[in-house]
Length: 318
Image (tube, rainbow, N blue to C red; front, side, top):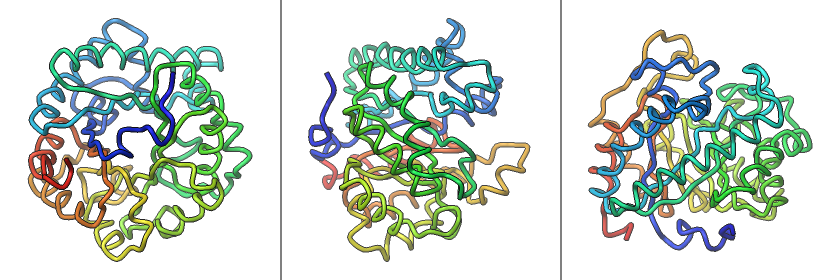
């Protein structure tokens, strides 16, 4: 039985800590071979599942210290048809992979619960094409048809809702929201931002949120910002209008570099961890409805520990 949108604990004021950038951490810090950044491949072997268990365990102490629950985002960012086909995963195998990812999170939920940390599960959806370049070809109809199988797979599981990350355009966001509504699942939509605080292609974040809400009757539970350093969107949210109240989560990059610069870098830029934590804390007053605190590219449990120490617990978030 799934939660309904109005029943998501985030919408009742509950805060959740989540992890850092799982793909970059596993590839660069742990030496895992993840073609196309497909972390869900680890779920397919006991060795891989052990690696995932080790990945999550440091977050037990972080969440406990912060006094907050934990959000398990499934490692299924690449578990969609085009990306899956490159790795030999057809529709049936992708459905199994998405379901298996939720089942793994359920296993970890039990471990976290035993340690006194409550948690929820989000089924993660990624974009059809590039996550860092504007997809001007995408239509709402294409997006809905393309993403429906993955969302439908999550609807078969204990996932509480769906989150779509690194979206670069409005039509794909609208299509995913429609697929989620059809499946009866709440959805959170997270946009990639560039160093100018806008979406790839130049659309302002506030305009993108307003357009998606207008096209979906405000169906998304909330929106998120991800894959960008706080210095690049601080002024955007500080000077924003009513739309900032629709931002419910942040997953920030460790690096201040642009996506183009990061794409061409042979090594991982973990940035300045104390500085990142302070800049994270500085943007929160402009985002009164933030309920998910997390990291993206280049971040790991060290960044999240520092971010939580700087941002949580605060009376405002209890």
